[in-house]
Image 1 (spheres, helix red, strand yellow):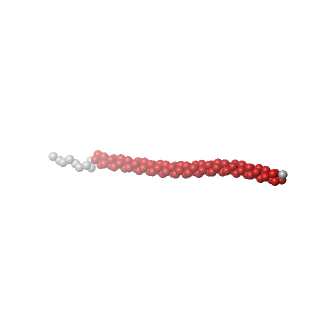
Image 2 (spheres, one colour; image 1 turned 45 degrees about the vertical axis):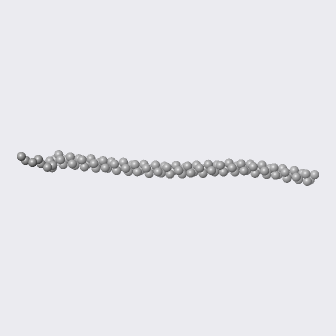
Image 3 (cartoon, helix red, strand yellow; image 1 turned 180 degrees about the vertical axis):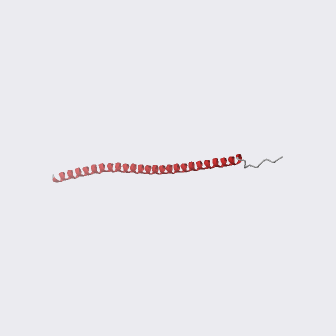
Amino acid sequence: MKTQAFRTLIVATAAVAALSVAACSKKTDEANTAAAEANTAAVAADSAQDAAATAANAAADAAAAAGNAAVDAGNAVATTTTTTTTEATGNAAAPAAH
């Protein structure tokens, strides 16, 4: 009788242990999945940060180019005005006398 009770206790303990391992394994799988998803999100966030930095650099380059274009346009207007003024004040070559 004692042997039968002991065997029953061992089988019941083994069953509880098996259920416990099964339950923990499932949670481990879920934790691994969550960790993988978190890692994927971190990589995506890093990529987004890189893209934002690239966009900021492109915007700065565009602003610099626009500033340079404005300066070039101002210089072109100044050159045209100087040439026109010189011609209008009579500094151009005089026509030949008859």
